[in-house]
Image (tube, rainbow over all chains, first blue to last red; front, side, top):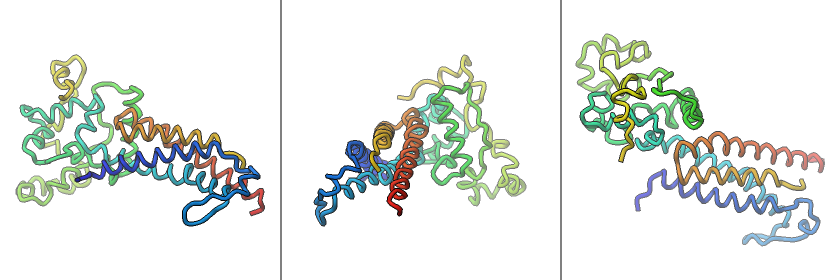
Length: 229
Length: 61
């Protein structure tokens, strides 16, 4: 059986949450100042402990240890579970980008990378890897802002990127390759590219559909917004 | 320390919301986990630690 990290996280997360709920219910019904409980003993397999001590251990597990585990696993799920293209497509404002990327007729950078299999899987994440667990704090805060604005519907279409795209996402794969090094302008502009003072798109065209194409009411909008099968 | 009732109830709600996100991932469950369940766990931890501190002080520890 070949389990992915995400499936392991789902199974572990479910176990932690279910156990947490059970222990919380038990903790909610416990009186920690009960005299009778102080005298009773509980057999925990390897030793007998006073019932009050056992109840406090259960409280610690229910309110500190298991919540810490659940938060860790769920955050892992947040940062690593969004690698897949369908994760991005689950927010409908991203559909124009995803649909265009999968369109073999499209000439955008994303579509060319997709149809030529230059990136085999998790195509969105490969170029926007700042959102992942290893990305910087600014990208994380941007991700949280996007999430808040999407779920509260306080956004306007077409969406616009406020954060500058980091050229390093392109250079991670292209820098040092013979084709990249063979282009003289890459060497000329190298310092500016690394410092994000100019963007790769200046020479390499659109990465995604234009703002005009993604504007509601435009001739391309309905096609770009069609839900993927 | 007498009771940990509201802390346990809040933690139960937070666990339930976290479980929904883990089993049915999507933008709305993710937002509920990020902006409701996670802070709720934080509030629970603070409430619990304050009660433990008060209990230890009462015993002179």
